[in-house]
Length: 353
Ligand SMILES: [Zn+2]
Image (cartoon, rainbow, N blue to C red; front, side, top):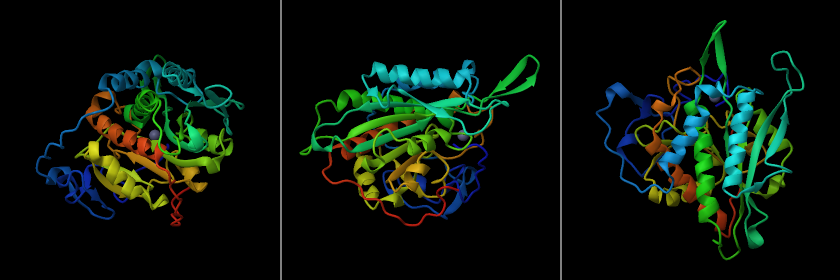
C-alpha cells in the first residue's frame, strides 16, 4: 500500500472494527460503508468460517512469503539491490511456470522520476509474465497485479538496522499472485470457451510505495494496447483476513462485478465488504483512470501497517488460500466468458488522489 497513507475509520472497513453483523453472514454479499459499529472487544468470539477446499498450495505461499519478508531482503527498498533480488525471484518463478515475457524480457525497466539517496537516474523494475490465450479472445487481456517493493529499513546505529519486512504489504499479494500464476498456467492450458480464451498478464510492480511509480509506468508504457485490457485485479495486503471478510474496492468500475463475484465465491465462502475509499491508493488506480474495470482485493488495515512488526507470523495463510480461490475463480470465468466487462464511470473522485 502506498507510503504515507494513514487509515481512518472511514477508510478502513475492517481494521479492528467491523461493520455490524458482517462476520455473522459468511458467503453473503455485504455492503458495509458507513456501518462501522463494533470493535474487536465488543464482539463475541467469531464463528469458524465455512470449510472450503483450497485450490492453491499453502507451503508454496509460505515459501514465497518467507523469501520476500526475510530480513536478508532489508524491506525491499526502492531501487536497492534487495528490491532487485525480489524482482529476480518473481522472474525466475515466471520462467519456471512456463510464462512468456510480457515485454522484450520479463523485466520492464522503470526510470525513477526523482533522486534516490541523492542520485538521479536510478531505476526500479516491473516483472511481466504472460499466459497466452487462444482463439478470437486471445487479443483481450486480463491483468493480475501486485507490488513487491516495501519501505526498506531504518539505520538505528552504525551497526544495526530495523527491517520493515512488509509481510502483508505486500509480500502477501506478490506471493498470492505467483501461486495463482503457477496454478493457472497449468490449469488453463487447453481450456477454451466458445470463442477461445483471453490472455492473462501477471504483473509484479516495483516502486509502489513512493507513489505507484511502477504501475504508472506500465500504464504509460503498456506492452499491450490499453483498450484490450478487459479487467485488472490488484492484490495488495491480502494476508490478514479477519472474520472471513474480504474488502473489495472498485466494484463500481463495472456493473458486471457483483454477479461475477457472487458466482466466483462458490468455493471460497467469503463475506465481502465493498468500499471505494482506497481506489486511488494502490496499483489499480492508473488502470481505473484509463477506464478499465478494476478490482482491488484487500484484507484490511492493521496496527502493524508500515511498521517493523509487519511480519510473517501475523499472516493468515488459510485466509490467503480462501482469497486465492476467489481470484482463481474470477480469472477462470473472465478468461472464457463471451461478453466482456464494461467500464462504468460513476465519477469516483477518490481515484488519483
Ligand atoms: Zn505500503
